[in-house]
Length: 597
Ligand code: ASP
Image (cartoon, rainbow, N blue to C red; front, top):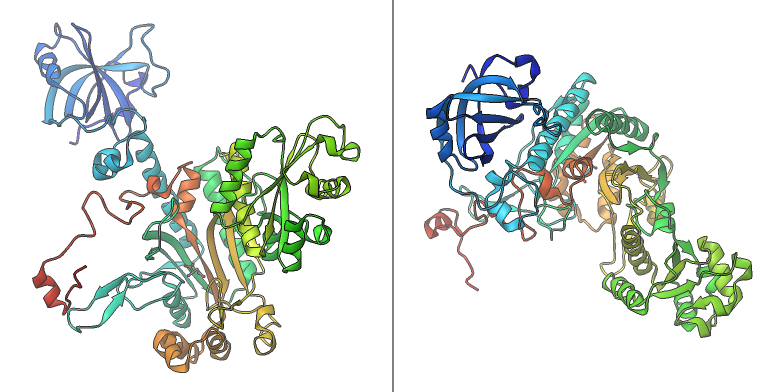
C-alpha cells in the first residue's frame, strides 16, 4: 500500500489533507448517527469518524466492523471539535473523516480484549500468542528488545567486533545443566547436543585469530524453570583476545550504561558499577546476586553468640555453622501470625527456623533497651546485653524487628538472602526505576564437593586462576581465586564471564582436579585442549543474559513478557503444542524405540 500513512502520523499539520490508514479496529463506538473507530497499527492509534450524511457507504460498512477487523480507510484529516480532543493520544487533536473504506479481513471475536492491558490468564495468552503480541505492552517490549539488540550490534561493530554464528547441532558443552539431545539419523545411537552456550566455540575462534567475537546467541539448558528461566534463552556472547579482566568489565559496563541511558532513560543507575568480592557479597547479603537497591544487610552474630545461653545459637556455632540476621525497619509490631508466616518461609528455603526479636517502640535508643520492651519467643533465654549487642551489629533501633537464622552456613545465607528480598518487597524498598548494577569479583576457582570427592568449578571450568594463584592448584586448590566476574542487577545475575586458561597445562590440571580422566577430558574437551597447543592467545569473555536485561528494562515480571514465543514453566510451547509425540516411522528412521511407561 504505497499510499498508506501510519496512524501515529496524523497531526494538525495534515489538516485538510486526504490520507489512507490501514490497521486493526481497536475500539468502535456507535453514537446512533456517527460511528467512531479507533484504528490501530504498529505505530499507534488514530480516531476515524464515519458520518452517514457525508459518506453513507463508508458508514454502512463501518456498522459491520468489530474488534480486530483489518480495514483500510481513506478520508480527510480534520481538527477535532473543541472539547473532544484526547490529550492522552498522540494523535488526539485530529481525526480522520472517512470517505471510503475497504474491509481487508474480518476477525472472529478474540478470546480476550486486545485493546486494553487488563490481566488475562497466561495460558490463554500463550495459546493465542499472535493476538497477545498485538497488545500495547507486548508490542512495546518486543520492539524495545529489537532496539536493544540493534544498539548492541552497532556498539560492538564500531569497536571492531565481528558477529560470528556457531552451530546449534553440536556436542555437549557443559555449563552445569542438562543437555537437550538431537538423535542422529545417519549414525544411529549417536546424538548431537544443543549448546548450553557457545563457550568452547568462542574460545576456538580466539585461537583462530578473530580477536573480537560476539554473537546474539541462543542457548539451550534443560533445567527446571523459574520466572527468570526458559529452556532456550538469548545471550550476548562475547570473547576477546589479548585482554585482562578490566578490559571486559570496562567494555560491558560502558555498553550497559549507554543502553540504559539511550533506551530506558527513566531508569536510574549508579556509575561506576560497584564491585564486591564474592566473599563480601556472601557475608553482607548471603548471596552472590544481591539486590543493592536497599540496605537490610546481614550481620554475622556467630562470634558474639558462640557462648549464648540460647541453645539454638550455641549449638549452631559449636557445629561450625553461622548465626546471622538483619533488622527489618519498623516491623516490631508484626503479629504472631505474620511471624509464623516468615518462619514457614525460611523453612521453605531450607532453614530450620527463624528467631524473631521485636524491639518495641518506646526506648529512645538502644542503650535504654530493657527486657520489658523486647518481644521474642526466645526472650527468656536471652539477656539484655546480648540483645543490645545483636541490635548494634544489625543497626537495629527501637521499632525494628530483628530476624535471625542459625545453622549450617549455606543454609543460613540462602534463607536470609531470600527473606531479605521478601521483606524488601513487603516494605516496598525496591524501587523498580532503579537499576542497581554491580560486579561480583574474586570468586573461588574451585569448590570441594564432599559427596563426590572432587573439586568443581562453580562457574566455568575454563576460568583461569588469578596471576600467582596457579601454583595453588598443586597445593591448596580451594584457595585459588578465579579471574571470574558476574554482573548482577536488582537481585538477578545478568551476566558472567572470565579470563580463560590459554595454556593447556593449567586447563588440564583444573579439569583433572574436577575428576575428569585423561580419556574423558579428551572426549569432552579434546577440541579445545588440542587447539590450545597451537598458539592460543590469552583471551577472555563474558555472556550477558539478554532476556533478563529486557525484563529489567521493561519492568516485566517474567522473561516470558519479553520473548515473542516463550514456553511455559513446564517447558511447553502452548501455541504449537511442543513437545509432541512423533510417528513410529520417524523414530525408526532415527533408530529409536520408546520405553512405554
Ligand atoms: N559461557 C558462560 C555462560 O554461558 C559465560 C562465559 O564465561 O562467557 O554462562
